[in-house]
Length: 191
Image 1: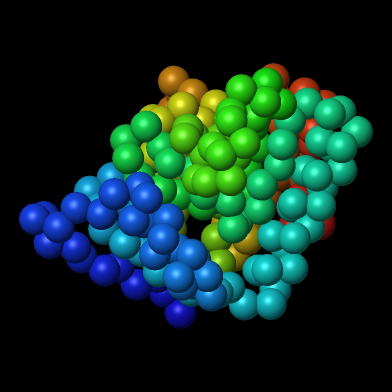
Image 2 (image 1 turned 90 degrees about the vertical axis):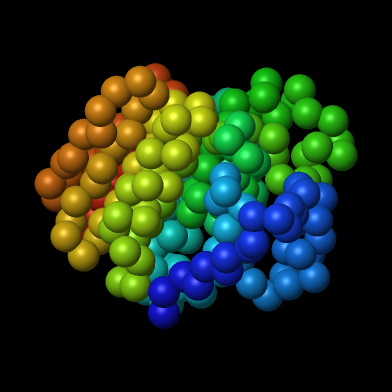
């Protein structure tokens, strides 16, 4: 299945609060909103993609628990980017200081910024160009490091703040670099 986009007429503006209510009323759906207000219904992934996404979140969570440097989010966590879009990466991370600077009310809603680190794991039905545009959007809105993992082609695109993307063919590991110091993802778990 591919994502379905709902075009909202330009005269209809959905506020952040209204979008949050739409998400709550449709909790069985994974929804995103583009900067132009288009609603995107993300279909569930297949079992294998979900399993591999869980492996990514486990590895990131173990590293984070050991270091205590931040907060990890799975694909149900939403971020309102500075450009106005609402996105939910497959895995994300922010520094603890950023989390602690939020009020309890802000912590309960879509977080009001881009994650410092984001991962998108391509499922068989995902168009690569759509995920590349999403990664570029994260990068342009403050994400310091992003990985687009394409299991089918055993390829990873790395997005860094202020740099051109880097493409790795069949890497054995991925480094969290200075954003996630000491984090390394063993890609054999993911391929």
